Image 1 (cartoon, rainbow, N blue to C red):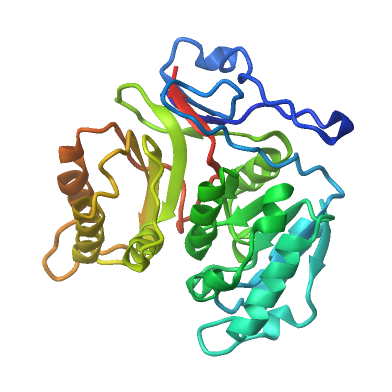
Image 2 (image 1 turned 30 degrees about the vertical axis):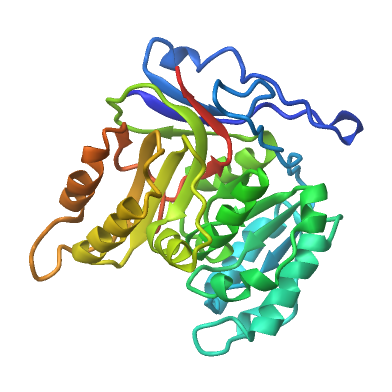
Length: 333
């Protein structure tokens, strides 16, 4: 089976400066000769790509990180289990009573959540900001946030689902981020995904197996949760990078709703310049009363675009959630 390789440049931290170079000589010996996709951050941008991402510094053991809850309230047991795993590796900063903070379907008021996230964005001593849980809420506070200080010293932002709002904003700034489990999901993913997440933050590299029959790819990785991307398009904020490899996943949506969201993105021109589609899991997305499987919808709506499609990546709300670096540059090798 060929391998989907997400590879950013190896990072040198001497004198706190990044050395962005071409990824290492090639895949491991066991993969040589197989088709593979290298997603890399490089100082030599592929033809047609003007912006080179500014990779955050590596997150080493002992680094200081902040756990923030800008979206929905967290299950206290799952939050504590995730924090325990993070504390075994990092110096974790989390506000007291974060697990208890809730206001309906939100983890506190808009003011509370915006202030907490803004303080983390502005803190130069943090090596990463890790989202506690998904759900909903980031779209409500995004207009209040300033990324001016953060952009001067990019750091890793880690999360998925509702965190897609942040990933999209960082893509505009040319700053890579990590699509990976939120804190409440860390204790539920298999060891291989947990280890890969820590390694991605330290080395900027992950490997994902995928059955692939596709042509060439050359572009930045972008995307995340389909519902969030649809909502960002409705708000007028969605800016899909030209020539990107678009990642899509979702949870608990019926097939006709997936069709509706894809159709809106297609008709709105958001997928017109996409070079490839990276499809994660569509967990608990039912065929509905019309008994139309979600995969049939994905094929019917996306195959006419004439782009390479990679199905069933182990990314999303299912049993697995392998990390993938968003904002890195992709090329088929």
